[in-house]
Structure formats: C-alpha cells, structure tokens
Length: 317
Image 1 (tube, helix red, strand yellow):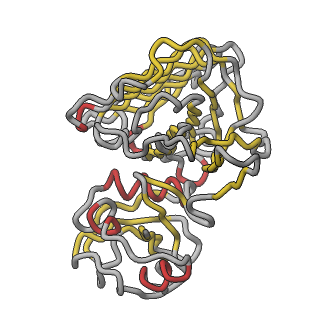
Image 2: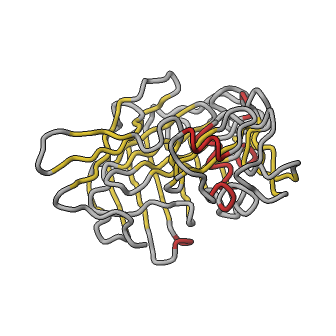
C-alpha cells in the first residue's frame, strides 16, 4: 500500500493525544505488542495487538461490560486503531453474536471465521487483551511518523486502552511493517485530532477532521437527524454526499461496513441484520430510541431516501 500522505518541509502532520475524560469502565493496560502489516495486497493487511496486566478485569455477565447479545443494551463491541502522522484511524465493529464467555465468566472471546471483522478478540481477567484482525478493513497507511498508535478495545461499554510508543522494532517507514513492544499504560484512553504545524511559524492550529461525526475508512460519517436524507446531512456539515454510503455500508457494501460505522456513531445500538426496506436508506438507525441499526439491501442506497423515524448513517466528503 502506498502512503496516502507524504510529509513536506513546509508542513508536518501529527496527532495530538487529548486526555479524554476518564470513565469508570476505562482500563489502561501495558502494551506488550502491536504489529501492523501492509503487504501489496490489501486483503492481507493485518493487525496483532496484545496487552497484558493483572489489573485487566472482565465485566459481569449481563452487565455493561458483557459484549454478548445478553449484555446490557444488547452487548457488542469494537476495536479502534488510531495512529499518528496521518496514518489513519480505523474502527472495526465486533457484533454481539460473535462473543462468548467461559463458565467462570473470567474471559470474553470473539471469533469471526469469515474475517470480515476480526478473526479473534480475547480478554482474560487478570491476564491479557488480544486481537487479531486481517483484511482490507485494517486500513492503516504506514509511515515513519505514525507512533504513538492508540488501541481501544470496547466490550459493550467497557474500554481497554493501550498507546504504543515503547520499544521500536519497525517504525513503519518501509510502508510495510510497524512493530512496537513494551509500551507503558497511557494516562487515559486517548482521542485524536489532526494538527498541522508550519515549519516557519510557532503557531499550531488544530483541526478536528469530522466534527460531530466519526472518521471511518478515511471518510467522515455522520448520523442524520430523524427523517433527514444524506444530502441534507452532508450539506449541513459543509460537505457533499459520498457514494461510500452505498458501497461500504449500504446496499452495495457489507454488514461489516455498516457495523463499523454504527460502532463509531452509535456504539450502543444492536445490529438488526441485512433487510429489504421501503427505501434506499443504506445503513441506518431504525427506531426513535436508536437501539437498533440495519443495513437495507434493497432498494439500492441513494442519497435522497428519508423517512421518520429512521436516522441515516451518511458518508460525506
């Protein structure tokens, strides 16, 4: 994969790690290993994440830390990989149906044999948090300034966070491999904004790439208002409708794409499946309380489809 963004002498792109408000469910872990590989074939992109620590704990079955469908609010989870240096910010949804626990309820395990999301995500109380994801959904564009890379694993409402500076084995400058090890726990679960710094000025300006929305697969996504179409939603953000609404998360996309977008915009919503609808709504929140989202497979997703109480999830550029 070729780098999407190149540094110039006049402009350097960096990621500022902001201390996000601490939540009672945030668990800050020691980062043992983070491997990101980008071979020439995007379908073979790979991330392997390993965090360790005796302080890692799993939530009780049926509670807000239970990612199974029987967990509070319908469960589910996600993994977010946020890199510096313009390398990318990816969120992969982990639907509730892929999760299980053991008899002692000391671990939660996610599997997806299809590989559309992640092959394996595992959290063991007192031991580790691990993830292995392979495929084009791991859209991190490697470069030599991408550290630190933050990883946030969500099990329902519970977060497990690492931030990989640590020991550099491969820095990503070869555009193929990033490997860091032994990173201290972060001070908080980080969020990111992109910062542009001029080489001729000491002034730093900070720009949030998708204010009020979320960056998924390099595009800004927004949750529309009740009954609003995607043209209206994108124009309201000073942008235009992007066809990824259809090709990534809509009728021409995949369940995994819709799940990734929903995980970024409404992580507590449960996936209601791929269904035929009365209009080309694509990926959308179906009810007024925003507890369920579906992917409308027919009719074809269009920018103008709208009906109350649906809230469309729209890509804009």
